Amino acid sequence: MRILFFGDIVGEAGRKAISLALPSLKEKYKPDFVIANAENATHGKGLSYAHYNYLIQAGCDCLTLGNHWRSKASIDDYIDDASDLVRPLNVKGDAKGKGSVSFDVGGIEVRVTNLLGTMLMRDQEDSPFERFNDLLGKTKPCIHIVDFHAETTSEKAMFAHMFDGSVSVIVGTHTHVQTNDAKILENGTAFISDLGMCGDPDGVIGFEKNSVINHMVFGEKTHFELNPKARKMINAAVIDVDDMTYSAKSITAINFILEDK
Image (cartoon, rainbow, N blue to C red; front, side, top):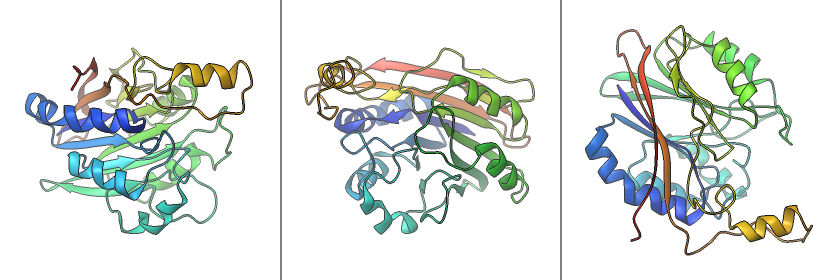
Protein backbone atom coordinates (compact mmCIF):
# COMPACT_ATOMS: atom_id res chain seq x y z
CA MET A 1 0.00 0.00 0.00
CA ARG A 2 1.36 3.38 -0.98
CA ILE A 3 0.07 6.46 0.84
CA LEU A 4 0.54 10.07 -0.21
CA PHE A 5 -0.05 12.45 2.71
CA PHE A 6 -0.05 16.25 2.29
CA GLY A 7 0.74 18.70 5.07
CA ASP A 8 -1.65 21.46 6.20
CA ILE A 9 -3.39 23.12 3.25
CA VAL A 10 -3.33 26.89 3.87
CA GLY A 11 -5.86 29.01 2.00
CA GLU A 12 -6.30 29.41 -1.73
CA ALA A 13 -2.61 28.93 -2.53
CA GLY A 14 -2.68 25.59 -0.72
CA ARG A 15 -5.88 24.44 -2.39
CA LYS A 16 -4.57 25.35 -5.83
CA ALA A 17 -1.23 23.71 -5.09
CA ILE A 18 -3.02 20.43 -4.38
CA SER A 19 -5.20 20.70 -7.48
CA LEU A 20 -2.25 21.51 -9.74
CA ALA A 21 0.24 19.03 -8.28
CA LEU A 22 -1.88 15.94 -7.67
CA PRO A 23 -2.17 14.70 -11.27
CA SER A 24 1.60 14.63 -11.79
CA LEU A 25 2.26 13.27 -8.28
CA LYS A 26 -0.21 10.45 -8.88
CA GLU A 27 1.50 9.66 -12.15
CA LYS A 28 4.96 9.69 -10.54
CA TYR A 29 4.26 7.88 -7.26
CA LYS A 30 1.09 5.92 -8.08
CA PRO A 31 -0.38 6.17 -4.56
CA ASP A 32 -3.22 3.87 -3.53
CA PHE A 33 -4.57 6.37 -1.01
CA VAL A 34 -4.25 10.17 -0.76
CA ILE A 35 -4.71 12.11 2.49
CA ALA A 36 -4.39 15.81 3.24
CA ASN A 37 -4.76 17.91 6.36
CA ALA A 38 -7.40 20.53 5.51
CA GLU A 39 -8.03 22.39 8.77
CA ASN A 40 -6.66 25.65 7.31
CA ALA A 41 -7.99 25.28 3.78
CA THR A 42 -10.69 27.98 3.96
CA HIS A 43 -9.11 31.43 4.23
CA GLY A 44 -6.44 29.97 6.49
CA LYS A 45 -8.77 28.73 9.23
CA GLY A 46 -11.37 25.97 9.05
CA LEU A 47 -12.94 24.07 6.15
CA SER A 48 -16.06 25.12 4.27
CA TYR A 49 -18.29 22.66 2.45
CA ALA A 50 -17.29 24.15 -0.91
CA HIS A 51 -13.59 23.70 -0.21
CA TYR A 52 -14.15 20.23 1.21
CA ASN A 53 -15.75 19.28 -2.11
CA TYR A 54 -12.99 21.02 -4.05
CA LEU A 55 -10.27 18.96 -2.39
CA ILE A 56 -12.13 15.67 -2.75
CA GLN A 57 -12.77 16.37 -6.42
CA ALA A 58 -9.10 17.33 -6.83
CA GLY A 59 -8.21 13.74 -5.89
CA CYS A 60 -7.92 13.49 -2.10
CA ASP A 61 -9.41 10.29 -0.66
CA CYS A 62 -9.42 11.50 2.95
CA LEU A 63 -9.14 14.86 4.72
CA THR A 64 -8.00 15.29 8.31
CA LEU A 65 -8.47 18.33 10.54
CA GLY A 66 -6.95 19.87 13.68
CA ASN A 67 -7.45 22.53 16.33
CA HIS A 68 -9.35 24.79 13.88
CA TRP A 69 -11.71 22.01 12.85
CA ARG A 70 -14.82 23.95 13.95
CA SER A 71 -13.62 27.45 13.04
CA LYS A 72 -16.27 27.39 10.34
CA ALA A 73 -19.44 26.48 12.26
CA SER A 74 -21.05 25.37 8.99
CA ILE A 75 -19.00 22.17 9.26
CA ASP A 76 -21.70 20.88 11.63
CA ASP A 77 -24.11 20.91 8.68
CA TYR A 78 -22.15 18.40 6.63
CA ILE A 79 -19.52 16.56 8.67
CA ASP A 80 -21.80 13.67 9.68
CA ASP A 81 -22.39 12.89 5.99
CA ALA A 82 -18.75 13.36 4.97
CA SER A 83 -17.42 9.81 5.27
CA ASP A 84 -13.95 10.88 4.07
CA LEU A 85 -13.48 13.67 6.64
CA VAL A 86 -11.82 12.93 10.01
CA ARG A 87 -11.93 15.41 12.91
CA PRO A 88 -9.83 15.09 16.08
CA LEU A 89 -10.72 12.02 18.14
CA ASN A 90 -9.95 13.55 21.52
CA VAL A 91 -12.12 16.68 21.48
CA LYS A 92 -13.97 17.17 24.74
CA GLY A 93 -17.69 16.50 24.99
CA ASP A 94 -20.10 15.54 22.25
CA ALA A 95 -19.02 16.44 18.73
CA LYS A 96 -20.33 15.73 15.29
CA GLY A 97 -18.27 13.70 12.86
CA LYS A 98 -15.78 10.93 13.59
CA GLY A 99 -12.24 10.98 14.94
CA SER A 100 -11.27 7.65 13.36
CA VAL A 101 -12.56 6.31 10.05
CA SER A 102 -12.02 2.98 8.29
CA PHE A 103 -11.66 2.88 4.48
CA ASP A 104 -11.74 -0.03 2.05
CA VAL A 105 -8.84 0.45 -0.36
CA GLY A 106 -8.86 -2.33 -2.95
CA GLY A 107 -10.09 -4.83 -0.37
CA ILE A 108 -7.58 -3.74 2.28
CA GLU A 109 -8.70 -1.90 5.41
CA VAL A 110 -7.02 1.45 5.97
CA ARG A 111 -7.90 3.35 9.14
CA VAL A 112 -7.21 7.06 9.56
CA THR A 113 -7.22 8.65 13.02
CA ASN A 114 -6.84 12.34 13.85
CA LEU A 115 -5.62 13.51 17.26
CA LEU A 116 -4.86 16.83 18.93
CA GLY A 117 -1.82 17.34 21.10
CA THR A 118 -2.19 19.27 24.36
CA MET A 119 1.25 20.85 24.94
CA LEU A 120 1.18 24.62 24.30
CA MET A 121 -2.23 24.37 22.67
CA ARG A 122 -4.89 26.89 23.70
CA ASP A 123 -7.75 24.39 23.72
CA GLN A 124 -7.15 21.69 26.29
CA GLU A 125 -8.63 18.45 25.01
CA ASP A 126 -8.71 14.94 26.43
CA SER A 127 -5.38 13.14 26.60
CA PRO A 128 -4.49 11.92 23.10
CA PHE A 129 -2.50 9.07 24.65
CA GLU A 130 -5.45 7.76 26.68
CA ARG A 131 -8.06 8.25 23.97
CA PHE A 132 -5.91 6.55 21.35
CA ASN A 133 -5.07 3.64 23.62
CA ASP A 134 -8.79 3.15 24.19
CA LEU A 135 -9.38 3.18 20.43
CA LEU A 136 -6.75 0.52 19.83
CA GLY A 137 -8.52 -1.74 22.31
CA LYS A 138 -11.72 -1.50 20.25
CA THR A 139 -10.35 -1.87 16.70
CA LYS A 140 -8.72 -4.74 14.87
CA PRO A 141 -5.21 -4.57 13.39
CA CYS A 142 -5.02 -3.01 9.93
CA ILE A 143 -3.06 -0.37 8.06
CA HIS A 144 -3.54 2.45 10.55
CA ILE A 145 -2.49 6.03 9.79
CA VAL A 146 -2.43 8.71 12.49
CA ASP A 147 -2.39 12.48 11.97
CA PHE A 148 -1.11 13.88 15.27
CA HIS A 149 -1.87 17.60 15.14
CA ALA A 150 0.33 19.18 17.79
CA GLU A 151 2.56 22.15 18.58
CA THR A 152 5.71 20.48 19.89
CA THR A 153 7.96 17.95 18.24
CA SER A 154 8.60 16.41 21.66
CA GLU A 155 4.93 15.49 22.16
CA LYS A 156 4.78 14.07 18.65
CA ALA A 157 7.93 12.02 19.22
CA MET A 158 6.64 10.74 22.57
CA PHE A 159 3.40 9.64 20.95
CA ALA A 160 5.24 7.98 18.07
CA HIS A 161 7.55 5.99 20.34
CA MET A 162 4.70 5.03 22.66
CA PHE A 163 2.66 3.56 19.80
CA ASP A 164 5.52 2.36 17.59
CA GLY A 165 4.51 -1.03 16.24
CA SER A 166 0.83 -0.54 17.10
CA VAL A 167 0.10 1.48 13.95
CA SER A 168 1.60 1.80 10.49
CA VAL A 169 2.14 5.55 10.17
CA ILE A 170 2.27 8.55 12.51
CA VAL A 171 2.68 11.96 10.91
CA GLY A 172 2.75 15.28 12.70
CA THR A 173 0.90 18.34 11.42
CA HIS A 174 0.14 21.89 12.66
CA THR A 175 3.49 23.77 12.63
CA HIS A 176 3.44 24.26 8.83
CA VAL A 177 7.21 23.64 8.70
CA GLN A 178 8.43 20.33 7.35
CA THR A 179 10.89 18.56 9.63
CA ASN A 180 13.94 16.61 8.49
CA ASP A 181 13.33 13.45 10.50
CA ALA A 182 11.30 11.07 8.34
CA LYS A 183 12.18 7.56 9.46
CA ILE A 184 10.97 4.04 10.25
CA LEU A 185 10.96 3.53 14.01
CA GLU A 186 12.32 0.43 15.73
CA ASN A 187 9.06 -1.54 15.66
CA GLY A 188 8.01 -0.66 12.12
CA THR A 189 6.00 2.59 12.34
CA ALA A 190 6.78 5.35 9.82
CA PHE A 191 7.16 8.75 11.48
CA ILE A 192 7.82 12.39 10.64
CA SER A 193 7.43 15.15 13.24
CA ASP A 194 5.70 17.50 10.81
CA LEU A 195 4.70 17.13 7.17
CA GLY A 196 4.82 20.89 6.66
CA MET A 197 2.23 22.74 4.57
CA CYS A 198 0.84 23.35 1.13
CA GLY A 199 0.60 27.06 0.44
CA ASP A 200 2.66 30.26 0.32
CA PRO A 201 6.39 29.52 0.85
CA ASP A 202 7.37 33.18 1.22
CA GLY A 203 5.28 34.25 4.21
CA VAL A 204 5.01 33.14 7.83
CA ILE A 205 3.50 29.63 8.05
CA GLY A 206 1.51 30.34 4.89
CA PHE A 207 0.30 33.84 5.75
CA GLU A 208 1.43 37.18 4.30
CA LYS A 209 4.51 38.08 6.31
CA ASN A 210 3.78 41.75 7.08
CA SER A 211 0.31 41.02 8.44
CA VAL A 212 1.83 38.51 10.87
CA ILE A 213 4.66 40.84 11.91
CA ASN A 214 2.30 43.77 12.44
CA HIS A 215 0.01 41.65 14.59
CA MET A 216 2.57 39.70 16.60
CA VAL A 217 5.31 42.31 17.02
CA PHE A 218 3.53 45.65 16.89
CA GLY A 219 0.20 44.57 18.38
CA GLU A 220 -2.00 45.75 15.54
CA LYS A 221 -5.59 44.54 15.87
CA THR A 222 -5.58 42.84 12.50
CA HIS A 223 -6.02 39.31 11.25
CA PHE A 224 -3.37 37.29 9.49
CA GLU A 225 -3.82 37.80 5.77
CA LEU A 226 -3.20 35.57 2.77
CA ASN A 227 -1.24 36.76 -0.25
CA PRO A 228 -3.49 36.43 -3.34
CA LYS A 229 -0.40 36.37 -5.58
CA ALA A 230 1.50 33.81 -3.51
CA ARG A 231 3.67 31.13 -5.01
CA LYS A 232 2.55 27.59 -4.32
CA MET A 233 4.51 25.03 -2.30
CA ILE A 234 3.86 21.35 -1.77
CA ASN A 235 4.96 19.55 1.41
CA ALA A 236 4.02 15.91 1.71
CA ALA A 237 5.32 12.40 2.29
CA VAL A 238 5.06 9.12 0.43
CA ILE A 239 4.82 6.07 2.68
CA ASP A 240 4.92 2.40 1.66
CA VAL A 241 3.24 -0.08 4.02
CA ASP A 242 3.27 -3.88 3.88
CA ASP A 243 -0.26 -5.14 3.16
CA MET A 244 0.21 -8.26 5.28
CA THR A 245 2.18 -7.12 8.35
CA TYR A 246 0.91 -3.49 8.36
CA SER A 247 4.47 -2.33 9.07
CA ALA A 248 5.90 0.58 7.13
CA LYS A 249 8.65 -0.15 4.62
CA SER A 250 9.69 3.39 3.69
CA ILE A 251 8.84 7.06 4.13
CA THR A 252 10.07 9.84 1.86
CA ALA A 253 9.41 13.54 2.41
CA ILE A 254 8.43 15.71 -0.57
CA ASN A 255 9.10 19.45 -0.74
CA PHE A 256 8.91 21.60 -3.90
CA ILE A 257 7.53 24.85 -5.29
CA LEU A 258 5.28 24.75 -8.33
CA GLU A 259 6.10 26.78 -11.39
CA ASP A 260 3.82 29.80 -11.87
CA LYS A 261 0.54 28.93 -13.56
